[in-house]
Length: 177
Image (cartoon, rainbow, N blue to C red; front, side, top):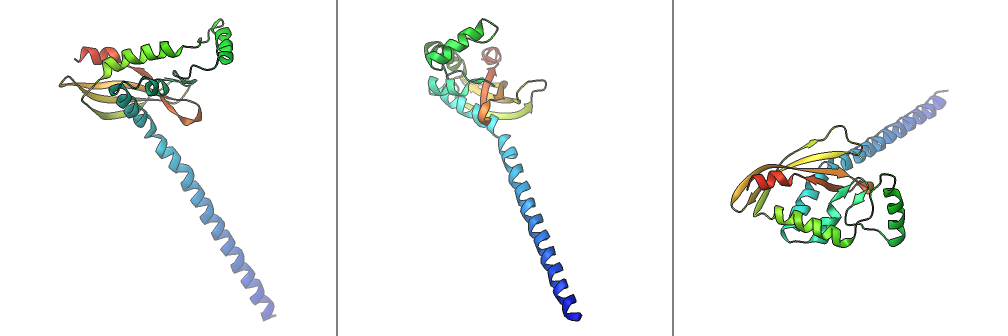
């Protein structure tokens, strides 16, 4: 009898080891799930930094790829076939396709206002009441040797987890000059 208790005890120990191993694996999975969420908090700031760098170098194509809505970047003007559907949709309240030239003209205007010597990310805050996750990133800009403080950049999460600049308070930049 004592032999069967020993076998049963070793099975019990084996079962416990499996439970512990599964617990450790599930804990590791939980840690991995949290990591991208923490990294996502940095993404709006990175989009603002890239946008400011593109504005300084007048890289209008990059600016167009970083500026948009939750539907996607403004610079993604689409194919002729895709634009046909957008045009039809615009009859019902949707937005029509934008030409590459229109995007360049708008990005050039934004770039001319945002040209700066230096910048500093001050803070970021969630924007409540939006359909898509949106963050307001406040930036101090040094323009023409003057400090223009707390310029708000609204950054929205688009498909694929990309963060796009949706709005920049250019009037605050121009008033601070």
